[in-house]
Image 1 (spheres, rainbow, N blue to C red):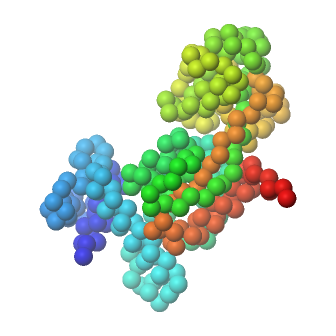
Image 2: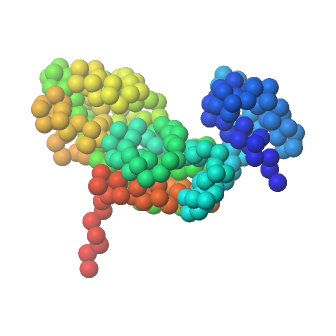
Image 3: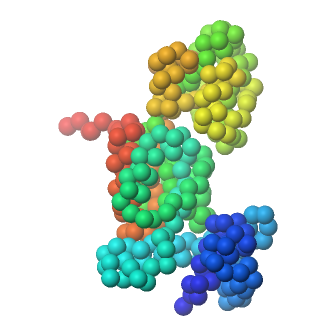
Amino acid sequence: MFDYAALEALATVLREGSFERAARRLHVTPSAISQRIKQLEERAGQVLVLRGPPCTGTEAGRQLCLHFEQVALLEHQLRRSHPALAGQASGPPTLKLAVNADSLSTWFMDALAAFTAGGTELLDLRLDDQEHTAQRLRQGEVLAAVTTTTAAIAGCNSWPLGAMPYVAAASPAFVARYGPLGGKVDALARAPMLSFDPKDRLQEQWLAQQGLPARTQPPRHYLPSNDGYVRGCERGLGWGMHPVALIERQLADGRLQRLLPDAELRVPLFWVHLRSAQAPLERLTRCVMAAARAGLEQAPPPTA
């Protein structure tokens, strides 16, 4: 039987990033946190926390943390079903989720709003590129993720959400400076482009979709902020890939213009969660699916 006070200390250290902040969160001393972690590591026979600024978990530490969070979710679900047990509550559970920035800035926020309006669970979101969020799930960092992966993940269920359409866009002044960019290999090769971070490959995918060779490597700025990314394009720093839903006003009033009017890149998204957490995550999954139906492009129904 696990020592759940020790597991709570472990989970709090990994969430807060330090023993001192975990101690303040749990209203105990840092030495008490250290002692609980030490005893847990002795029982496990291995290191669970990598001490440093910030503290991070080993693979075993992350898996134990995930186990504790699933137990907390199950207990919370039990208390919702049996209010008489509310006196045994130790506080609302925290759900760790991984999501890409574009989804969070558009449709996914509606899912979170609907979910938090119907319960007391807390959220801990990890931002990552949509092609890399699944890795956080595999590593035991999160319970669920919005991802583009179509490959099955062991121990997980996957639900198709729809597709997010992207367009390549830049400011009129930028287009005037570099000439007509659409379909022009030489213009695209010398015109600076914007990337969210080094993991962001949407620009390369769009270039490949236009038939440009893989060796095409335009100059690149990195702007790891959705608001900053859009404003950077508005100010003429470069061209970039934008979710249509995020720049509708800029396209309508002319602050941004598409490089190619009909060249959209559609990115399919999936909701993937641990199978062992399916029951306690059922309400969140319903909220996510409803928001996706309203905010993402859905595949047309099959014809007879």
